Image 1 (cartoon, rainbow, N blue to C red):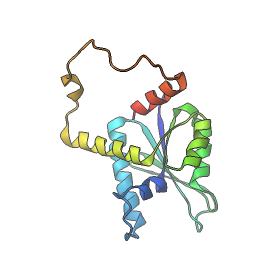
Image 2: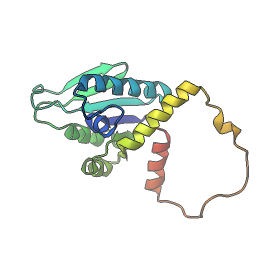
Image 3: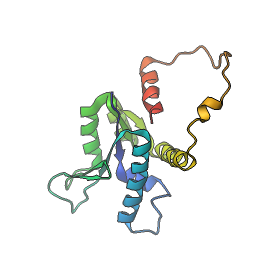
Image 4: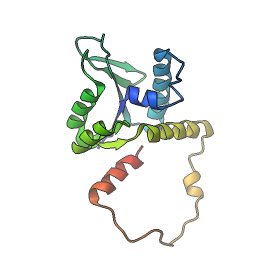
Length: 172
């Protein structure tokens, strides 16, 4: 099953000091930097990425779609929140969606549809790791670990739902 990463654009943008600086009013530049980071991540992981932004109070009467460097962008229509668009997408994509947001209310709703949620801060860490891996070029680190038969951890087994969620998050 192909993974579709649905990003709550402004939530990720405003939660990160990397893209949002309190005195900086240039939102266009911050969005461009975010898109560049997402593009690097998409190239590295080969997952489909879709970013949803609020159309704003003076937005368009209809939903606007755009594609920048292979990343789909949706701007919600005037009077509609990006959260509403994300909920619709989660309802449609179900288990194949991974939603990036720190909005607890939105996270609870999309989880009800079967989507997996990752916080904006955690996803930003994944973006940083992906960028560092591209810079280093070392992808054989996992083979440097010694092979052992020693068991680790407790015999506790998580629920099937939790294991499936964890498996989807590992693909990030």
